[in-house]
Length: 408
Image 1 (cartoon, helix red, strand yellow):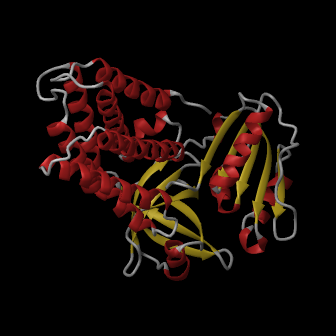
Image 2 (cartoon, rainbow, N blue to C red; image 1 turned 90 degrees about the vertical axis):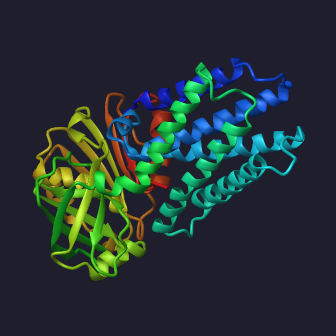
Image 3 (cartoon, helix red, strand yellow; image 1 turned 30 degrees about the horizontal axis):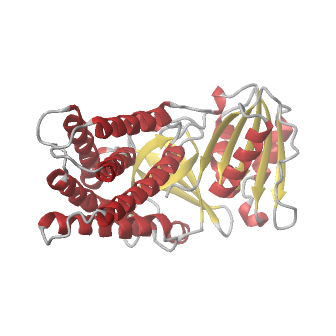
């Protein structure tokens, strides 16, 4: 399913920024290239304003992008674009011999550029970064943003202190961006992790997959297919919040199924204890199967099976569903027996099991997708993105809903 509100928000704010800087009158006469330099700087600041706002995980804004995973795709590429704009601004400044004297604006401009390049490079491209380290580097971006705002305000050849459309816009967007950054760093952990509970059951389903039951202090409303961010308060365990899809529950009890594939999930698999306290932010996501069309295609990769299991556990479907479940080895296909049993008891449901240890990888290039059908997918980002391209090539207007594991 598509939602253009998020794209429209990005386009409109960018267009307003460009227009206001383009038509504004500088305090003194400047050459055209210097005008370009200021416009580029304004667009870069607008990009960082948008990114800090997106990072706040506001439920309304999430809805504009039809899911947090899709929001973070835009977040990533806006960050890259903003970094490029900062570098272009610096290159033009160097060509114009701007701020060559030793003064505070020169120092701050250089410091801001250095921080942006280093932090953005780390967060965007260092795949070795642990999740908590990645989050810290994001927080430090607020320092770079502070330096950049001060640099622009004191060195701009446009009057940003007297009342004008440009100054109102720059102050408003900068304030919203800065407050969003402060919220993420200092208030998000307390303000949005409102659901509390404890671990009441731990079931190791295979040598690599564990299912944990959480009993909540108060019921939580969610749609089967959504995901949450959870913090686990057990000594020796990482305290940073991590995203996981719900694999079932009735609101009072919820289930998470996690694969031992990283530092945190390894801790969960090996040492999670009963009665450990947790707190939860969410739910997020738009994997609402009940809103799909009568004919549906489901594609799950590995632990991406969890939102589908959450729905099937509590529903006897009345849609016509064909499912493709790709996993690696018996240890990875922990729900295959459940799916086969469900298929036997429901003629509307058909499952195709693909064990890539002994079978060819799933290939849907020749799948006869019906024109009036809905496709739901969940799994690794690379897999999901591949099938998004395949299905849209078959039908550019196909009803697609998907969640990908990649949130960074």
